[in-house]
Amino acid sequence: MNDPHFIGWFPMPPALRRFLLPLALVAVALGLILAGGLAYSQRPPGPGRWDDSHEVSFDGIAVAEPYAMLRTPTETILLVEAGKFGAKDRLLPFDGNGVRATGTLLERDGVKMLELADGDAGLQAIEVKAESALEEVTTPVTLVGELVDSKCYLGAMKPGGGKTHKGCAILCLRGGIPPLFVAKVDGTVGYYLATDSHGRPLGEDHFEFVGERVTVTGQLVTGRGRPILKIDSVRRSR
Image (cartoon, rainbow, N blue to C red; front, side, top):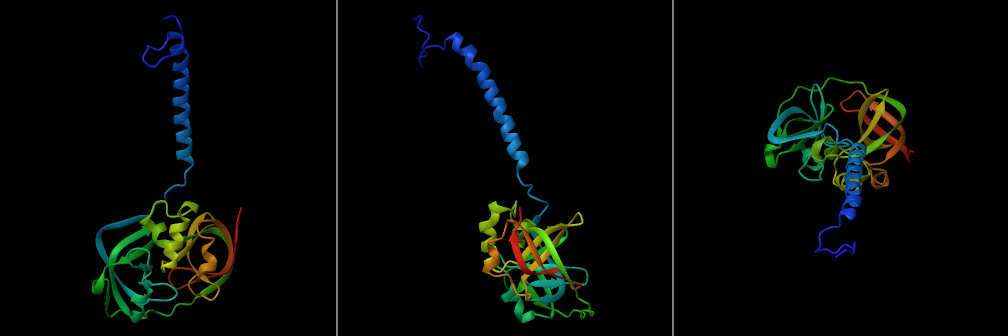
């Protein structure tokens, strides 16, 4: 009975209890500190939101190229289908004409997207005042930022960017979801629709850079709705 060796069905020897108790307390404290540090180091999910509790409608001019958009007198709203699909095919018959788009709204930092309702309720032809002539301005730029799929980044997923989201983002872009290039310029975060150097939708050769910190050079087109970044080259940044 005087053997200090621990046996599971015997009471723990007092000497062993005195030894293990502080070790257990230190281990718990270190675990809490480690957990807090890991949580603090994680990428913030961002302010994106998806209000899918009710549908809203916007009137404007349908724009099918390079991506499905609705251009209103005050803003440009990206249009997508349910799931990981863009809305270009549904918008093509209305291209350049007035429509009422109805669906659920995603929004982040003032950038809006509408997931269209099913059937005819999603898009209806209407009379809209013709757009006034706007001058486009093209500026050569070099930007450092991240290429993301707009639907997840604007609120469908949290977080909707970074390497952990890369696989999902590539599937979204393959399905026609408009890509955004997110970059901080002069302390302000900018959101630019990303196309190839000819203004066409991005192809597979760009998808490998999704979710990573990259440097792009190209032409920034402003003056008609959401700024468009025509990418000439892209490389990974440190």
